[in-house]
Length: 244
Ligand code: SAH
Image (cartoon, rainbow, N blue to C red):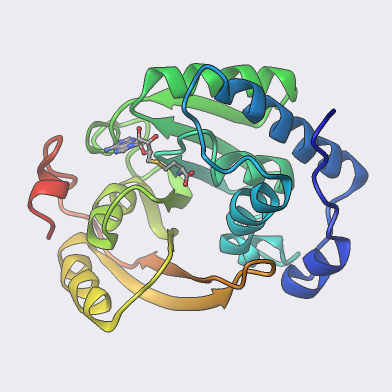
C-alpha cells in the first residue's frame, strides 16, 4: 500500500493564502515516497506518518517562506541557500513551491547530499543544486560569500550560530530565515549581541501554531544591514563551541 499525503487545500489557503497546483501536489507526494524509500538505508527522518510529514516537513518548510509566496516579493528571481538541509528541509519544498528561484542545498554530510542529488534527478528540477561542505568554509568562498538573497536554516544550532552561518553568505539587504521551535526573550538578547558583530538586525520574530498538532513554532527573520567582518564565520567548530 502506498502512503498518500493529505491534500489540505483549505488549510494551505487559510494559513498561507496559497495552494499547491496539481503538479506541486504530485511533487510533494513523490518527495514523500522517495524519503520513505531513502529512510530504509539512511537515517533521514523519524517523521514518516503522512499527516506528520505534511505538517512538520511540508507545511513548516513553507510557513517560513510565507513572505516569498506573496506575488510582490522582491527580487522576483531570488538566489536561495539552505544551510544544513539534511534530507532536504526546508530547501526541497521551497524548490517545488518557488520555481523562479535558484536554490543551493548545503550539507556537511556527503551521504545526505548524494540522496538529495537523486531526488533532484527524480523530480527533474533544474533550479536546484547541491553542495557538500561546512557553512564555516562556504562562508569564505568567493563564489558563495555575499551571493544570496535568502538563507534558510532549520534545526542546525543555536540562533547566534545560525546567524554566523547565514549572514556572511547574504548580499547586502538579504534575508536570513531561522526556523525554531520555542523562543525566549533571553535568546533574543543573545542573538542581538551576535548580530551587532555580524552586521545583521532582527527584522521580525513570528510565532505561529502548526495547523494539525497545534505546536508552537517561531521564525526569526534577520536582515543584513551592514558588512560582515572578514573574520566571520570563524573556523570550523568555533561558532558552536564559542557562540558569539
Ligand atoms: N534542516 C534539516 C536537517 C536538520 S539536521 C531539517 O530541518 O530537517 C542538521 C543538519 O545540518 C545535518 O544534516 C548536518 O549534517 C548539517 N550540519 C550541521 N552543521 C553543519 C555545518 N556547519 N555546515 C553544514 N551543514 C551542517
